[in-house]
Length: 71
Image (cartoon, rainbow, N blue to C red; front, side, top):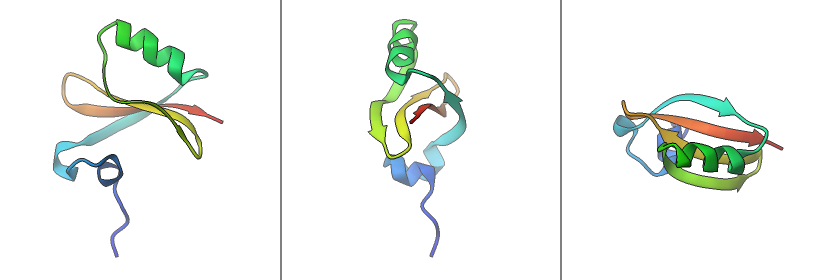
């Protein structure tokens, strides 16, 4: 059995999604608001996860990044 990929967990086809990295922050919601106001495209709003708060954004090349606040 194949382990689920990040793309499958995000509900996207694996060939259209590339996780490029994880950015850690002390306040995910605040950083999300700051980056959004500067035009960053978020694919997922900040949400509670078992490990903390996470939002997902992408760059102009289609790479996806996790913005994570660990609990």
